Length: 234
Image 1: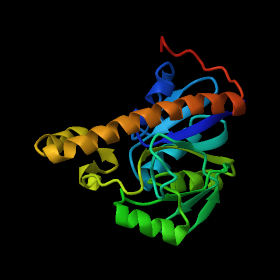
Image 2 (image 1 turned 180 degrees about the vertical axis):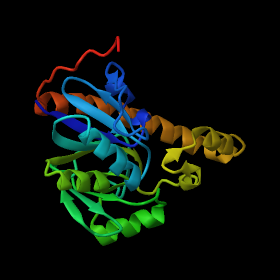
Image 3 (image 1 turned 90 degrees about the vertical axis):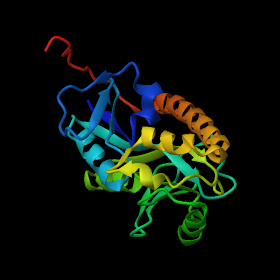
């Protein structure tokens, strides 16, 4: 029987969900990390469209898949998209191409950008695409699911408000991997940033925890059960 493929950007987004799951030892792509349960497979390879595509293809190569789900943090594009909120977008849009994908929800439009965007760019994305939220991965996952002729869904946790000003996070992104220690070192010597970063961290973790609870519920409602071979002694 088939399992659900869940694609995130990084481990921190899905840690509460996968902490009791089995890490896959025999990986179809060494650039991608995968965890599995009897109902789902979680894959992540880093931030951005290219990394999301790698992760999605690796998840599809892990066995029979019934549906594909893009999950993780997203930013708000309007005042209604408040931090901590978990949303099920109805549509995902690739900001670079304008291509749209149905994503199974009723909570508005998620725009996938190629970089972390500042408030000015958030306003532009909202105006051009009618967007409510922004991420960096969902459109690539949607394209992968579409090519495989599989149902696609998105569930996102809002980590930052539409007008929230933060340091340029793109400078800490190296090939899709967020350099956390470089970011913390940058913030440590800039006291004016401490309050904003503390708020963002709390918002992100609260949103992540709510997302993982929602995912557990969603998986239970949508997944079938398969037996995982026991490879603990291999």
